[in-house]
Image (cartoon, rainbow, N blue to C red; front, side, top):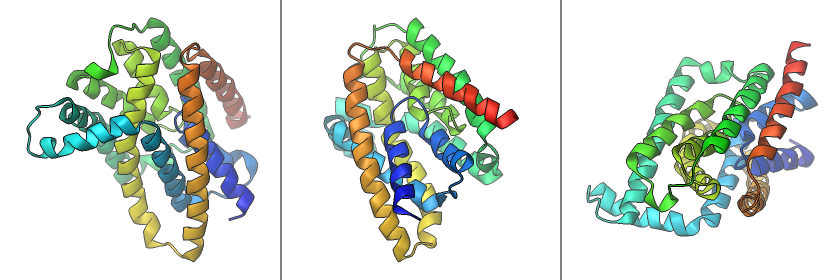
Length: 267
C-alpha cells in the first residue's frame, strides 16, 4: 500500500471517527469512489486503534474514573461514582456487541457495505440528529448518567452498525433526545466509543493478525499514528465548537453527501 493511500485512510478515519458524519461510511466510500483498492481489514483495525488512543487521551479523567471502578464492578460492589460509570459503560456496550456478532455470523455486515446504503443512512440519520438536537432538552448532566439512559443509548448505538449511520452521531442523537446538553451528549458518546472500539478491534484483530507480516506492521503503525493525531485534533475542534454551534452544520454535510452518493449509486 502506498504512503499516500495510508495517509488518506488515516486522515479520513481520524477526522470522521468522532464527528457525527460516519467514519465507516467514508472508509467504504474511498475504494468505491477513488479507484483505490480496499484498504483491508488490517488497516481498518490500525486506524481504529489510533482513534481509540486519541479519545482515551482527550477524556483521560473520565477514563481513569471508569478504570478505578472496574475492581468494584467485578466484586459487584456498586458503591462509588467510579464503579457506577464503569457499569453504565458496560450496559451501553452490550447491545452493539450482540448485534455486531449477529451481523458478522450472518454475513449481513458485508452485504450492507454499498454506496446506496451509506447514502440513505447519511440522509436518514442526519435528519434524526437534527430532530433530536432541536427537540432535546438540557435538564440532564453526564455526571448523573443512569442505567436506563445507558441502555437506551446502547440500543441506539447498535444502529450504527449500518454503514453511514455514524456511531457518534446516533449516540449523540440518543443523548440529546434523552435531555443531555450538546457537550455532555458528545462526552457520553465519546466515552461509549472506547469499549465499543475495543470490542470491534478485538473481533476484527483476531482475523487481521492471523495474516500479518512485516509490511502489515509497518503500514499499521503509520496508519495508527496518523489516525491518532487527526482524531485528537478533530475532538478538540468539535468540543470547542459545541460551546457556540449546534450539530446543524454536520447535518447539512450529511444530507449533501448522501444526495451525491445516491446519485452515484443509482446512475
